[in-house]
Length: 151
View (cartoon, rainbow, N blue to C red):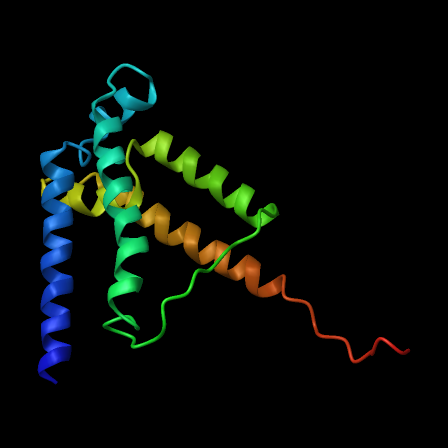
């Protein structure tokens, strides 16, 4: 139980650190993000580069130090996703939503923390979009066939 509690404390502290980092780098301000997307301000490029370096190091170093994930106890594996229609459409919707709202989902929550209550509309839109996507994907599942290769 102590290890589990310590894990949750670390997750909470990590989330707080992430939120403070987004606020400090001004990524929680839609105006700054939209300025970056309009190629007027390249300051956020350094923020994204720093995040990519930390993520890359984590993906390569942590599996060499630990055999399993601390919270789920499952082995570290890579989940490769092929480029299909769902990935392209989902990426397009994500990009349009990011451009319209001026903020990505993680920074939207941090934006609430800095007092941008209007961002609740964007977060509501994210939940609606996730629900619609889940509903569409659940009807898209095909029934398995009982035919064999010899038939």
